[in-house]
Image (tube, rainbow, N blue to C red; front, side, top):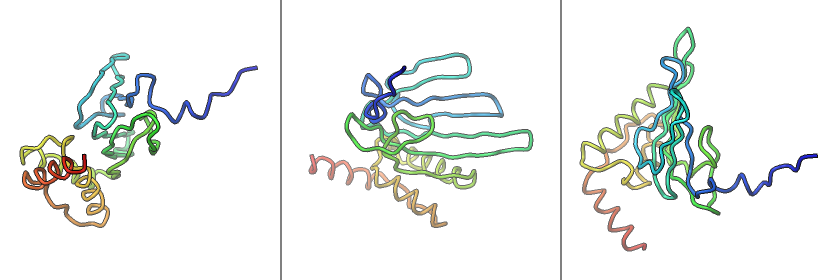
Length: 168
């Protein structure tokens, strides 16, 4: 008789305290990739699969796209903050244990809007993983409401850095 896994086991990051993301790349069928984020560990499983890990607090964008013989079946992007041990989180496919979801968008037209917002953040001279988490919530809400998100500027980034410094 086997013992069922402990429910607490599923509530914790991996044994090393990091968030694991399973990436798959089967050309024109399943394409999962990281758009931005500071990868702490990159493990190649085989020629089509990798597992990347993020330290607690790291922010990353995870893109998932799938197709069949008739075209795109699904496309989505999630911007996630990796959680530490004991922090609350939301589960997400291919992300263990899950994370603090800052943005969750489905359908290619909306995903491409998010990718454009990421590009604009980089064009402003800010690494998207360093941008204020509030910005990604803003992008999510504006796109979900069918409106254009405001760009993330260097001025907004400096204000975020000062706010984070004051809050400690």
